[in-house]
Structure formats: C-alpha cells, structure tokens
Length: 262
Image (tube, rainbow, N blue to C red):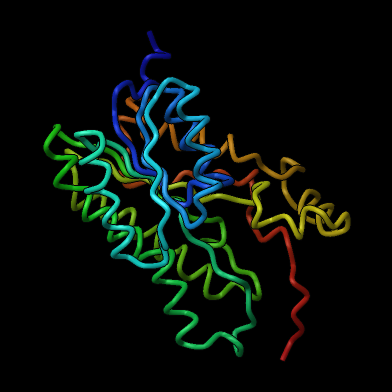
C-alpha cells in the first residue's frame, strides 16, 4: 500500500537539536513511523521528555546530551547510534541557528562560528554516518536549512550565508554519495519553536510575520517533521540533492528588523 512507503520500520535514526521544536517533532515522527532514534542536544531534561514520546510510540530512544556546536561531538553520534542500535539508516541534521546582527557588527569570528554551527556540524555527522549506512546498503540524510538561505534580509548575513552553504552542501554531498545514500534538505520558514517565542508573543511582530506569509500563519514543527519523514522514507526514494521549501510560500523575508540605512 502507498502508505507503507512512509514507514521506516526497524530503521535507526540520529536527530540533532532534538530536545525541542523541529528536532523533537522529527524524532517523534520517525518513531511513530517505526524507527529507533538517537536524540541529541544540550539539555538532558528536554531530551528525556522527547525520549518518553519515542518510547510511547513503541520504539527505542537513546539520549545523548552533548554540545553540538562542536563538530567532533556531532560526528561521534554516528558511532553511538551504531553501537546502540546495531545500524544507522537516517540522519537529520537539525541543529543550527545564529542571532541576527547588522553587517558592521558581524565579525569574522561570528561569521565563522555561524558556519561551524550550521554547516561543519552537519558535515561531521554526515561523514561519520556513511560507513555505518553502507553496512546495510545505504541510508538517507536530511539537512534542516532555512528560507533565509535563498532570500535577502538585513541583519541575517551570518545566518543566511551559513544556511545557503548548508543548502549547497546538501546538493554537493548528494552527488558524492549517490546512489546508495540520498541527501536532501528542508528550507524552513517561520515555525513555532522556542527560537521564535519572542516574536510570536509580541502581537505586532506576530501579525507582521503572518501577514507577510502567503499562507498567513506561522508553521508548526510537525509540518516540518512530516516533510523530513517523507524525504527519509521510501516515499522519497527517487529524490536526492534537493532542498524542499517548507516556508508557507515565502518569496521574501516576512520580518523586518528595522535596521536603518548607513
């Protein structure tokens, strides 16, 4: 049946940044579709809550509290999943993010830090996952990028540049790893996560976000998770090197920071 293509029964996954938001929703979605999941982020209490939801879906959860701004720590998750589950089939590189800053306040170190957190960590985990995936015939990787990787807005130079790099990393890695490992990405718009709390709780800012989004609302983490599951499952088996836009229809930034001309 067609619905069976969306199952990932008895596969093993790693999801980074899985304590809350998109990462948590994706970990639960993969578990509900049949996968055991290693979940990683900084805060163990958040991970424990997600692990309970994974186990309620009837799957195994392996909690790894770690600093994912360190590419070596991210890369180590592949071996940890292989050791715990005996295999590794799916990686979701979700960890990332960078605070907005005007260009003249964006130091070279800040830009390099953004690249490290959003791209180098994904590369480290992807590279480490390949041998384990090949043991069972292949696998799939999903990178969580952003709409800001393809549109321009003041204040988002570091974040947008890093996410644009992650999107192109996705295309390049897909070519290197085909045909046995598929690599795709999601370019995400405004989603109701803790990172957006400050904006979402301000009525004026929230209205600006919604009115400037063609679908006139903020996305839900589960909507991104559903797209990640699609790409990770056999439902997306003829897709690689693509970045799916899950952004409510955005063609330009939906939030202006009000930075003045120089």
